[in-house]
Length: 177
Ligand SMILES: Cc1cc2nc3c(=O)[nH]c(=O)nc-3n(C[C@H](O)[C@H](O)[C@H](O)COP(=O)(O)O)c2cc1C
Image (cartoon, rainbow, N blue to C red):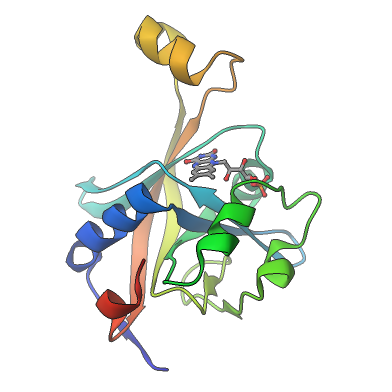
């Protein structure tokens, strides 16, 4: 099926709705070109420094963190109906232990601007290059958030990914979860 290019803001609402419902799939790649997918439930699509950005929050314990630190890029993919099991798997096992692309039968499709591929089975794919990163500072958070989300430390690192390209299947609205 042919993919079309769209503006990030045309698909922002649908993307965030799926993120809240089931999660999105963030893809990174190792130095040999092997991709890894991780489920993300928190993120922002916005505009800063004259660029459209996808901000993701990654804990240092994730294999994804190691990979994005090495390559500086990632993709964010919007899953379709029928991918619920795959989203669950990508959110519970680590790419250090399991080849999640193989396990989920994901087809990697080369991105145009970044090393990380998009997932062929997903309805929408964002190609992002990290232009800024920032660790959350515990002193700047409310006590409530610290005790709720960071009882063990492991504060997220925020990656501001410049959105370089968005591709989608023409009928993405009918496909998504
Ligand atoms: C619905 C859902 C949302 C998640 N959101 C995030 C997130 O935004 N950031 C994060 O660091 N981990 C998040 N996780 C946890 C990771 O997906 C999980 O730890 C995963 O196994 C890490 O994979 P990796 O080690 O291959 O990177 C989420 C998990 C689920 C199930």
